[in-house]
Image 1 (spheres, rainbow, N blue to C red):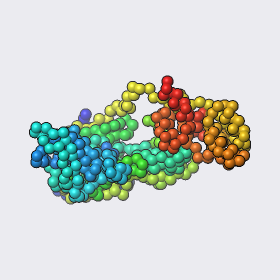
Image 2 (image 1 turned 135 degrees about the vertical axis):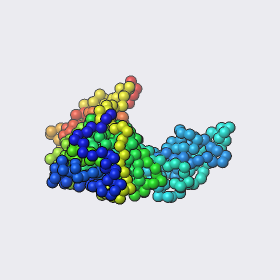
Image 3 (image 1 turned 180 degrees about the horizontal axis):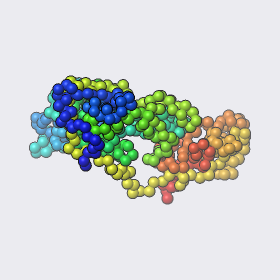
Image 4 (image 1 turned 90 degrees about the horizontal axis):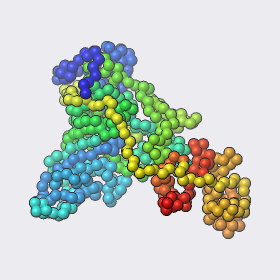
Length: 502
């Protein structure tokens, strides 16, 4: 694919010559917004040579290839662990790939592959354990040793998907707090989280990939890296472009590679990444002047456990960065999962490298595709949803007596009574066991025993998610409600058992 050009004013060679002489004019993407606003894109295109970008966020699709050299006697590793984090062994005898989301067998949810990489770059000793089945040429069957980064022949950071162009913002419409890769999401739309650096986003500053492609030299983890192709899940049509990158870990810094843990979700690694955008034409001057107010995304309900989660509203990065947005008629607190401070530091450091003549631009040998089709996973087995198994809920109000509810349980032959108000809005739930215990304790009023905190389901929730909810909370039924908490029915463990039997 050929780069898109518009009123070309400079070439890579001309800009690199200016860098060599110390004459290049370099600004960050944030600075470019103001320059174009005040001077116009035509003048900016003539005066500015390079715009630097930056991002620093959790990049779960990251990892490193390591080569240990051969032991004596040699081993063909079948399984191996680095600081008790399992690494992928299906390469040559003593190569491995350590992924950042793989968790420690000893300290799960506290330490993982991202921490191993950070420790490695920090110069710390890493423990290697390995097992093998033994062959004539690789007779050794076990190994335990320690090493640091200088002991390795190669330590190559190789990240299949980094630098998402933008991210959906996340919130949670459930009645309970949930824990996701977008962080902790409070119940009933109690907060919103987001990621990405907005106007500093590398791919938003060159959305048509005029200058970004295979061979583009970038800032990666505090060292020099390269774009080696489109990233996995590259979805440029919907402004979710990604890149695949690599670089030498021995040149990188733990300041820009940070192992991290998301509570009750898993481990990852924060990666500092920046791309220099050469201002070859007026079009690139205009594109690199994109502001936070120009970049929009969707606020998505992660409380809905399915791929096509509902969008609640559009929002700009300017609004997100303000710390609060309006959602469902109320003001909601917003927090970022990425670091704008570190993203700015990436862009500033890259700017400094170029100004000092330590970093030159590379023209891609092939630019990234702009029309890739993004496909969801092919499912060959039918998915069951709540609406296919929910049954009518037997309801009552808090004004009912214990005796009346007990009579209702017998007449309807059910174990769960859903408590509602006059508008059928969910207010609680009681079980046959609750009623039995109430009778034994001489209680008469339903409102004394009703369970107010109720775990619920939506009609379009997958049954797999419902089963997990029942198991997690040790309960046997979930009222099914709509967006306004109106009771639509109930899904019970008995109905699920009948489905399994069928």
